[in-house]
Image 1 (spheres, rainbow, N blue to C red):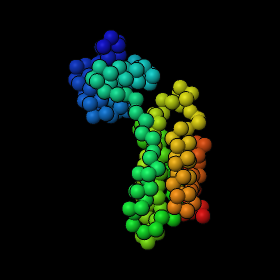
Image 2: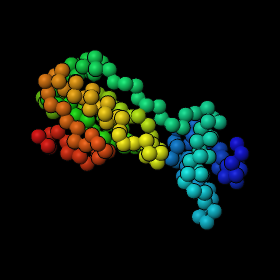
Image 3: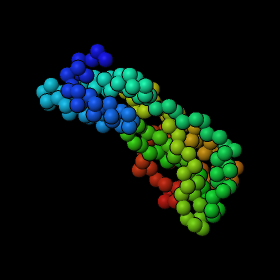
Image 4: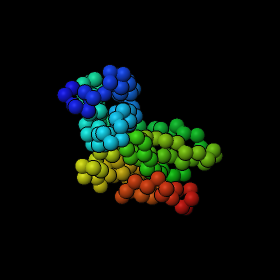
Length: 177
């Protein structure tokens, strides 16, 4: 690797960063690289991301997350049919983690009152935001299409309070209805 940032790291720091990458802890690897430098000499975030992405490639790992496979309505229908209780709604919810935003497709039941995650839809990392690739949010579009079809199949409402942008505080179906 020809990066001057990587070259300035000690062998111990490089080993620690590679260990984080082997465990797929990208943000921790970025933080470790940056923290290895004094504040006045610390590389920028984008330069550090480039270094970590290059280490991923050299170690034979994928830096970018693969999108989740398209949802299969038949499989989701079978999942809902196997749930305890009666399905009363299908809901799509935003969630986020260190990889970026995703949408969970949920079935809500009564007797017992519960939420059942049917699928998680992810179409890329938050790097899409910096590249101007979103909106629209393809995971939201897929959740809307498949969630609505699933809800229609069971004759229940479909709820997605924030289909246009990520919002983990959007009203939920049980509280909004």
